[in-house]
Length: 315
Image (cartoon, rainbow, N blue to C red; front, top):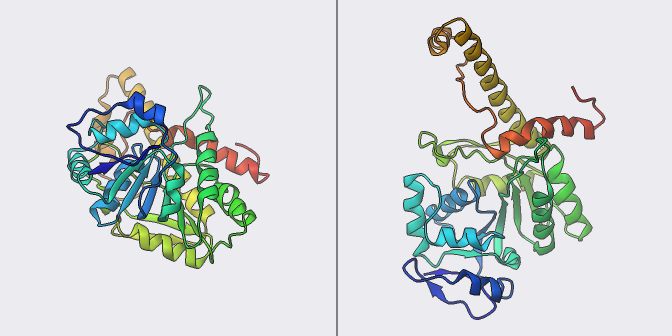
């Protein structure tokens, strides 16, 4: 049975039972820890939930943590936007004691590893709002225990892992690479695209030390067939910004050519198809929303902000 934690002893619920959200909120979800698990996934949005399901399918015991009790209830009722295959995984996971949901941050202490999957939303000026990420990292640092592996996956500026995790963990007296193991691995979930399931998409990981990279790669190997290790968290962070910018710039270029083609009474898809016959120096991109995903919208200012933090001028 799926278990939610509250101020009273945990009761089991099934999707067929009524779930009193108001009563749950009144009780609070911060007094009882779930049982120990292999992995805690912090943030159960379009990245965190499929990641948690992938780990559960691979045989890991998982604690899914989200600040929103409404989101937890939607997950419990399987009322979430997932691919059919992931919905099947969710329904299977909901019947297992090894898959737990909670809004209780102290549950992080019960996990051998923690994946931080919170979003980086943007304001009306497309400036990334890093407050949710900063709060999540502060919570993880506060709850961290010796032996834990901590992996940040959120799209953010270069240096975030060092600023929000490595420094604060060290200040707590935890030696990174000895007491705790920290890495950055950018998420690569393509929402709604069944052609690229997460297990077939290589993951990039950069640890603070060799031991950090090794532990993070071992964990991520449960949900990805290929794990590519890089030399540092900063390289992994810049990799994500490069990926998102590459996609956005090329879709924007395709949009410009679509506009020009309409003005000339040409079919842009025919133009792109003809260009795609070139076997080198070209990759087809098609007109569409270049900044559809939250991570993509945050990328341009995040990238320029990363440079500015290190004294390089914005361009």
